[in-house]
Image (tube, rainbow, N blue to C red; front, side):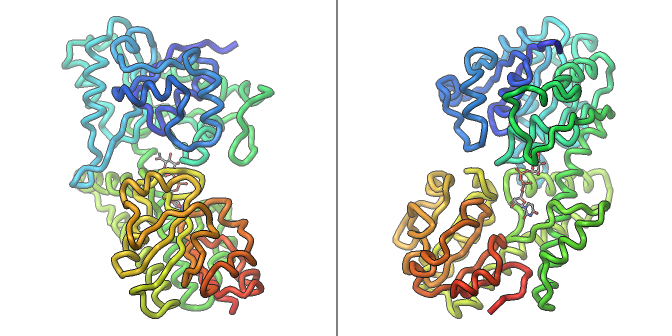
Length: 459
Ligand code: UGA
């Protein structure tokens, strides 16, 4: 039986909370620390605070037993052997990652170290952060042989976070000490040995694959760069296919066919080749900017990333132009909007291209009736309802009497709407789909004028 490790996770955001319950699911004992008392008591009471499949079940299973929530980092440090730092690294005004939360946590941990600890960077951080954490701890009087700092980046996606955590493609452990690497190997042993996947009630993987993941040992700096480079590369892929989709629109080619044809080449792969309205979320925009900034500071020309950001911004404007082209003028037009979160199956609205588009449409004088299965409450805090903006209870209510319906987020339920009912609800049967959720021919058969991304209109 693999060893149970006492683990502290600092930060109860998407990464921290998911890591905490998943480590418990893997058999470890976990203390999840957050300095926000309200969050801690909500979590103790079983409220997950975020919309994420499997999280409520796991929280229910382990809260106050194998996962305890508290605000006291000193106590957690004393009790645990491995301390994962999973606090936010928001974008600063210059585009760099703001590491002040990481530094504050490192200093606080340092003040409570009385026996050997492995401190693990789980947050996305720029290269050299590991060294800064080490120096901060040493400056607080801790002897070098009392701790190690390891980089163990996380690759989970929102919306499939729990499955991704427990079924990773790879586990990266950047460690410059054998002792620390061994602790991490033990923590992940239930996954790397494949033992977890034989459990009857194991959480299923995102694609149903249950293969044991490889664990890659690297230097700390390589691990830090792997995380930034992976996110930046995925952003490159998305901007690339968005640029190709524009070329397809100019030539009446079909980007879906192009993406399939490209993706069948094993060197390219089919994933992350879906064109749309540009990537958003709390990771890609921030991480591309931070990686570019790291390169700048090191005197490395990575202007490719500036182009990626440029294409991403243009993609939203192109979508706005599609609405304009379909409706002629925008002032006074009534629009139904499906989707506000930055992608489907999450209530996260950070850097959501859908919300940016709603803001642009409101600025053009449109009125909007919006529906999202999980993100309306959060959106209303940022963009309160008013004379031109209403939040409604269903997709059909959003379509009701609208001059056009816009699909802005790829929620699975938006791909299964009753098209007859939608057509009846709309004032004009125009659907402008920024996520390619429908077959253009099926839409035309249902009497719709259907405009999507990089695919010829079937009308
Ligand atoms: C992303 C990475 O995929 C994770 O591996 C990483 O761990 C995470 O960032 C992070 O650094 O924490 P996430 O932001 O949750 O995960 O969501 P993605 O599924 O990657 O989507 C990001 C954006 O790209 C969304 O706006 C999505 O709609 C868009 N996207 C994605 C496309 O436009 N086309 C695609 O083919 C794929």
